[in-house]
Length: 216
Image 1: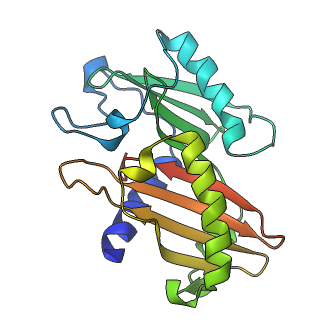
Image 2: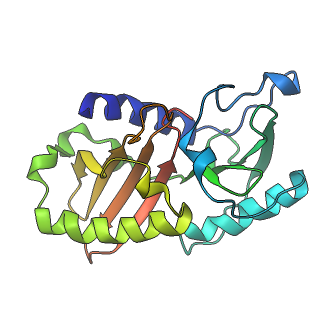
């Protein structure tokens, strides 16, 4: 299972670092595969979104879920997936790297949300630790905070997936990066819960990336 989560993580991170790509033809843009049932489609509606303008305003309103920092400035891009009627918004820097990404269905259910972390130590493989080396009390305290956040962002989703599992840890001294996943309880459902969280020295927890689609 950890190998599956590691593959999903790589795909999630690849998505998070790029802004939505404008397709040559509108119908070519596809976030989810038609005909498959995704766990996001089972969640209760959060907000009715009728057009791109409302979607952009909704995207702006979701930024505080990730941080108290000001909403980043940059190039704004929006793409609409006609197959599942979802919106995919990004704020990019001049190099096309995403500072903020969020995707959601037209009923407001979040598919994925992430912010950019510029700390290069996040990718320091020398800081990798086995999940078994994570202090159990530290994980339990962090899990309580992450659970509260997930239930706020996607009410009901934790009843649809297996218990959250840490499958990778990076300890860079002043913070821990946790890579967390949970597969659907019903194997007929597609997607998976994937989270990149930070535990800071004071015990507070931040979310960098959250996805119900794995690869997006």
